[in-house]
Image (cartoon, rainbow, N blue to C red; front, side, top):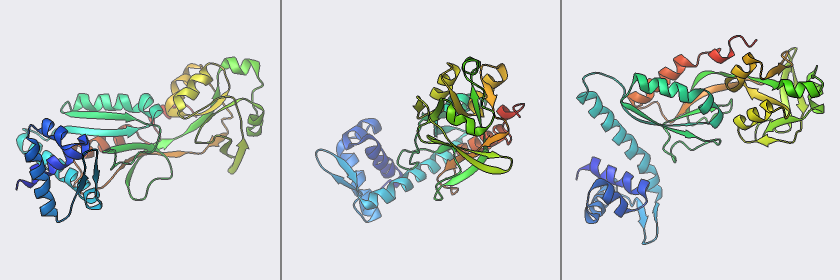
Length: 302
């Protein structure tokens, strides 16, 4: 049995959801696909899938086998690329997950620069405002702004994410400028649906201070809050990676600079250090060099 081909068939059947679809994609007949699956199950010593006329589902053994097959196929691809290439330029495909706001504000430009440098790499960017399961959703790399990371994953700290309290000049012409953090309770505060929705946390003079806030707009991602703040709707706590240009141009005004919102780590998260594809390692090194601490977007904001 060609075990690598059998693994490829197995992965294709799972990804496409049926043996017939996998047969079409791999240019194999349906009986050949079935034979490869059966031979792989014989080799593993367990049934990998429950197959009915309506749906396909993985057994417990199948769930264990699938990520190992993916890893083996990636290793083979890296080996072929390394042996067949006249140089060691990264090549292949990377699937990257990132929040909508950081993706639009910073990562898209970074990835564009990366693929200009390494044109043999293809990047599939997934802009998602939720925590993804890297294995289930076949994510090679996730960029996460958080201090609370899954201990089962490997994290490489890239930089730090700082936030500022800000408002538009139009809003401040119509409302008193807050002089202390407690004044925020008297303002229309635009909040994130999941982070600091009703309570904003600061460090003021070395002490931790929490302030209850409320407002008439909340959103599950920061880009929407930035747009509402620029429109003069209220005061928001926004990441500097998103609003640094607006702060420098004066279209947003920083408030309460002596009060420091909680800082979060900017992390690159992946599943394992073992057998790391060369392209993933290259991307990690590229991002670590680009997103330094302090990050370039914070220069001049203090």
